Image 1 (cartoon, rainbow, N blue to C red):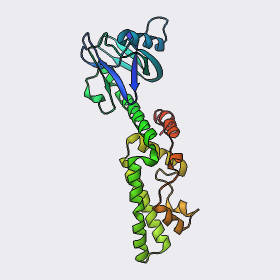
Image 2: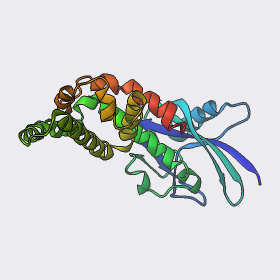
Image 3: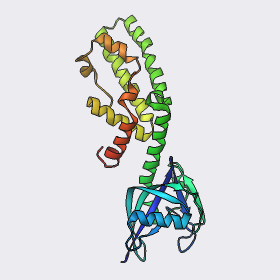
Image 4: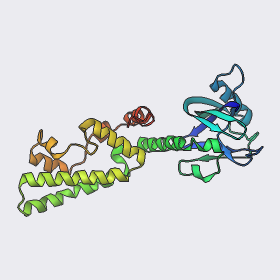
Length: 263
């Protein structure tokens, strides 16, 4: 079977990606990422810049390879390198496509994709979710993220529980152990409710720091803290959270751990 080598541009603007509906042939009306064939003597990047200028009258900057599609159509085998890209000059003009739109991670499934392009949608959804969460973290920071504030509000309520446990006559050691477990359970609930990529990053970073994705267990804490200190810290927010879980750390985790499968 003949192999046709092509390139496609995964053009992103923030947390959205540009897609076009084919305007010709057997797959007319199905959606794809714009691009085309690599001409003799061209690098994939050069071919992609040329194709996008021809198809959309826009200049792009070509970034990293997001994946290579290998797909068997009835008459040929398609090998398509898909590259992240961004528009640096001009606005897309549809010279060949019949329609175009910007899609988010949530709306990627709202159009009918060409069979080959459909196979790379999971990777692109990951990329868009990463970009969306990164932007949210840049704007809010983990410390001021809405879910984090709700978690810390609930954590502060453990003070009332502490007072009740003292009134019930429990020992300081018993209270410390119980409150610490309540704090860990609360952390588990809010991590599980977080957006997937943020949740995975927090679990990973916490495990790297403490050897446990939920943080230190009680016996670990007791090696360096008294029961009274554990009781006091159980209802206290983490003051330096944005120094522990950083944007740079999120970026490194996504590119070096998550995308490479080193989870």
